[in-house]
Image 1: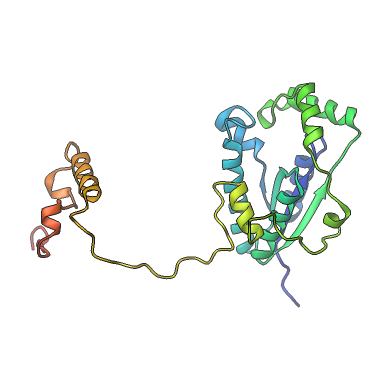
Image 2: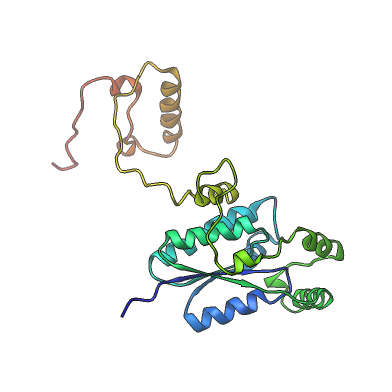
Length: 240
């Protein structure tokens, strides 16, 4: 019997369509890790975007989902992901982690959607944010409904130029997400420093100056430029 592949679920849709309700159902049904940005943004920053911090948070949550799949656990990104490019990128990350991808598109009649979003704000304000009618109008204009191509899981299109991969695009979209498609460094080169470099001398002296007020001499594991340029010094351990 072939082992079951881990699943990366992505809920998409406008506020009030039931994304988080569905995400919680999947969480309990499949023992999956659920990642809902609003539940982090509200206690951390008290607002939905906080000067771009939402993108910073989302990048780390995508990374957590990727790591979950690598450990054979299911994950749910309860993000919304309003553009097809975002959704394609998440799908590519699921494949890279050796998992499968499930896209859940939720929609409601517009008046009912707005009513539910308002009700949620009034009943569980710690889980969401207040939205005005102007906000809803803006969201409705910005959201790009998934196409039949997306919902059928047809072959991924190429990423937008100039990106060579969807993981590279994702790393640009979410600044705290590394390019997961890039190979990890396998070796570190070590070379002799140019101790005559003024920038290096300034850096080393600043480090020593920072240590001086708080670290006793025997605990300062750093040398000045003159000592670095001489022969290695081996100090016996205390009591040795």
